[in-house]
Amino acid sequence: MRKMEPVLDRSEELLKEIYALVDRPIRLMLACGNQNRTLLKNYVRAKLPASLELVAGPGCSVCVMPAGHIDAFVKVASQPGVITAVCEDLLQVRGSKESLASICEKGARVELINTPQEALDIARHEPDSTVVYVAAGFEATAPNVAETILYAAESGLENFCVIPSIRLLPPTIGRLMENETLHIEGLLCSDNNNVVSDTDAYSNLARKYNLPCCIAGFTLEDVLEGLLFLVRQVKAGTAEVSDDSAFSWSPRETNAALCIVSEVFCAVETDWRGLGTIARSGFVIRDELALFDATRRFNVHFTEGHENSKCRCNEIISGRSIPTDCPFFGMGCTPESPVGPCMISDEGICHSYFKYELQSP
Image 1 (cartoon, rainbow, N blue to C red):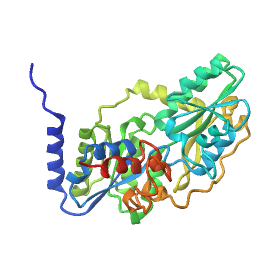
Image 2: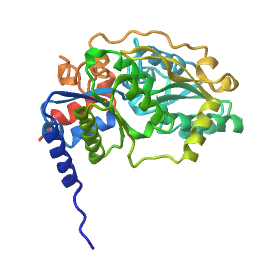
Image 3: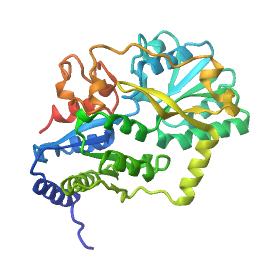
Image 4: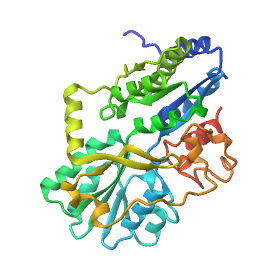
């Protein structure tokens, strides 16, 4: 049997190519929290050219959640007879005053799940309670959530509903690119969002802002190949889009996903932590399925909340700072005692910096 070449060998080759090309300061944004974590956990940042600056973007769905949305989750979860089903990363994120974890300690019932189907299962087994699924994520999560809502409607599971906080990344990247002081010269995004925000969305960004874009996977080789593509584009003065990642959808799968999303959701302006309100950057449930919309069932609105003034997540997820710029990073803010969502979530850039940069070999 032929011995396979280690992945690291290919990664070292990519690093050498990047190093040879970077002969001036270049600033790239890695929008995805998982891709940032890939570089950090493999201790690759120290091997990149010092003049290649990598900043984080709004690619962690928990990190971009504004306090006002958390306030709405807390208000619904505090209602009698409600079981809130939520992913673990969101549990400790604090709104203006409370988090789902803090009200759970006061008696609210909160169940940790990984998929919306698990929330449906709870609704089946708890017919006397109203199960509210907190749908927080990016556009890649929308087809699965939409399918779950339609299944609940067809099955007559009226004790199930969703509080939607699903976000679309391209409009937000557009908002960031309007800030010329960021000097972002290239954008790396994850390929799992591409089923809903297709390549055309990134092509439009590339044309409008002269911004090279690469849609890549999550392995070290994927991320380094994406960075190499971006550096080459910057050096050539061109702005193209690369979507050669292994994760791809067939036209049939894409059309099916888009149809089910449009049947359940419509795009509206949405608030983002640190970025304000952005047009057509989020989803709400259509009127025909209002029974399964927790915001309408409980008459709850997303209002402006009060962010923790000590937290610099706003600046970090918009490429204006890196975690080590924050005076609380690693001191007053750690995974055991987090100040903001970038330290709470596994995908948060502060969490990754703390785990890998501060403990690097």
